[in-house]
Image 1 (cartoon, rainbow, N blue to C red):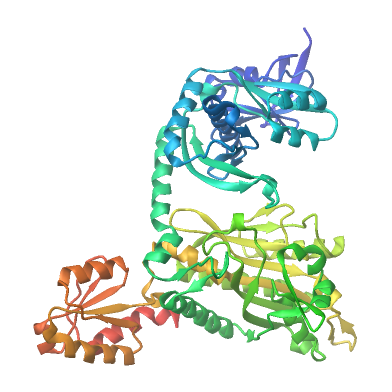
Image 2: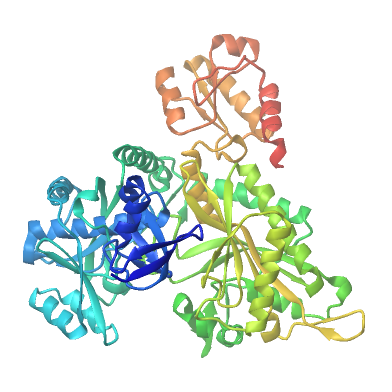
Length: 638
């Protein structure tokens, strides 16, 4: 029998009989590895464990404890869920697509007869358990494109037919388990019995292929883990996330709302929410002024010709709103960079003027599809802490490092850990290869010199330049995209921005686009969930509430209120004729940091009796002492 030479990840070479499978290779190394293996990579191509190896190659086994292995596990679980749904509801339901996603998977179904709801999850999960226990082999099949179309058309699966019709001529791969078959590239687990722990978590609507012009599908979300204990821990974290949901807390704390009358994705800020974002914006202005930024402001609409010059019209038009005034077309700005370039261009610049750092809390509007709108985290109108740095090429490295330090300082203030990645040139972009390479290298060099680890996210840069994306980690270890640093050689060229160098000649500046918190709306949403609504004292819309015990203290409460207000404390008073315990519990539900209780003893002594929202009591103090206490707690942020 002929032999094949297989190179293992450690560089060693082993000889196996031709036709051996990756599963055979895993068993030859150890039964533990064989149990953990879910697929393999042959010369960089992912394959099932059952694929015969008939030529020399490099082999890597993909195990369950790797991100890729978990992804395969969940993709197989998606097939199991679709199998269960088809077993239960038959021809009433058509299957479409079911990928794995971060922390789980989903499957989209089309049906005019079944409306899925969480109440149906137990039934679907029970059927999934039955199919998993049946130990059904998961077998890959290949056939021609026409044969696959014929197969799925005969099954009444019109969405699968559409998918196959979009594929080029050639071989199509399917996966079969029992009486269920699905179009799929693979790889998959070898049998259903390996799927041990799963849970359906939600249902939502989704348009076929993401287009509002297509049919509405029903998307069932779920998650799966190889270990039941890990699943249990994840579900507990999910439950905590539901409690912290900013949409729920935003309503309960009376911070903001949305209205169908106003329009989808447009935030209406209530007094406490507007004060919260004002505190954040004031903090931003102070921090930028300290770092040598100039505050600027641009118009909400600019002529469409300008958006054509920038490349937005060609590359970003579908995300913009347009209007017409006096037969002249205007674009509502989705970004703030154009006005900042016009400020730069308003007069001749010298190398001595650089760098110029323009900062704007700029409100922008982007046409997001209704299906992706999500509370404050994805809206159509939002305000960015947007800045553009125009500098000489030799200043670029120092400016990028300065922004990185700015991000580090601010994330430290809020207590966020974060990760960084560099997003490179997307398919739809402007500018030369040389400019993109220069910009990407500049970002990488700044990160490397700063000793900051990063990942590379291929093809996810802005259309005009690569970027560093900073993803902060919240209290539940979730990642949120907020800060961004983009390096741009292209727009200064398009707008013919120049400066006079020390040689008396004109030179082209480089532009750094950057945000620190990102969209204020999104950052507020992240803050709400990170702190579960228990904001730090310095950004709490209400820092304290004065609570009287009886009506006898009403006048004294008014006096204390005026003193605290004059001292800069964000204060309110509760003089309602309710029991003291009830008023304290309500203040705790409102997540107010301090309750200042006033009874006859406090009134006679000119004091207040503070207690914090956790129930801890502080020693009685005068109103003036409480003002100083608040100022001391907040002084680091002013």
